[in-house]
Length: 153
Length: 153
DNA sequence: ATAAACTAGATGCATATGCATGTATCTAGT
DNA sequence: ACTAGATACATGCATATGCATCTAGTTTAT
View 1 (cartoon, rainbow over the protein chains, first blue to last red):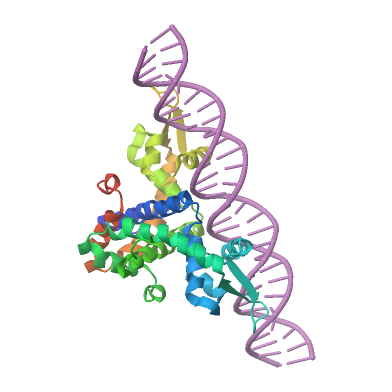
View 2: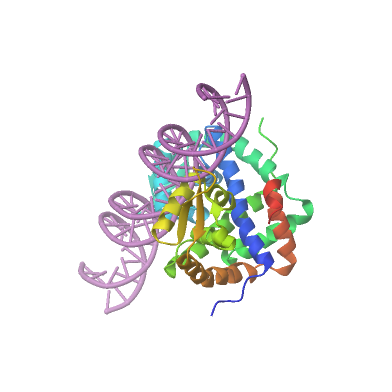
């Protein structure tokens, strides 16, 4: 009837995943907010667009790269456009589509954010994980993703 | 000015943590919802209370064990009480306090949920993590938590 | 004994998220 | 050319979350 019970390691990992996510993401959000900066999701958008430079990204492509679902991304972008961080132009060969590009002001904001964001990656991750756990952590996390995703990281 | 850049491993771990959390937690929520059951947070509350049996837990103690912040827990409990899963009695020696206990109906729901929840722990975690990554994953995740927390898992 | 500081928990409000649906455009089959 | 179905994106709505604040009760210091 009920499935066999998960073992201790499995339980520990599930609990740890939840705690770690809450704690680490929480630290990022708190510090960004304290610095008067937008949250990590905005950073991800800015960075994804900055990497594309002037070529830009279609909205559905950005969606695949980000953790947003489609309606949510749509709204976030609206606000980012309002704040002049991102431009949204009609796509050339698809009347439905929008091409997204980062603006200079968006680039500037991302750089500002990186000072905090990058610093947190150092202090909350790089300095914390013991070298002997590094590979296992990285590969173990990859194991947890569907194969389509894991290969790209 | 800007801090030194995090290395590749650090970046990979940060990205993976986010992806894994979204994917794995998402699977749990989806499957629970599909089965017409409440979400993982409710499960955590029920399980924490069931382990205490008739002794019960104060609300602030439950808060420490759970991922809720205080106002949010307060509201969740209200709904769980309304649905007869949990009782909230005045604490004996503290006029401000409430003692929480799980009801029979709460126990029953938790058991039902476990059929899905435990099964997902097996299929999404136990079957996925390669044995050689297990220790590194577990300990690496522990490394990421503040010391006060990590010892108890 | 009493005021100040603290703790437990509740509530209001602004924002975020998830999901269903809507609209416009595109593609394919006939 | 025309219709059926798919795709890109937007919007509405119900719920969840985070944060500030409120109330009631408790502890501490004088």
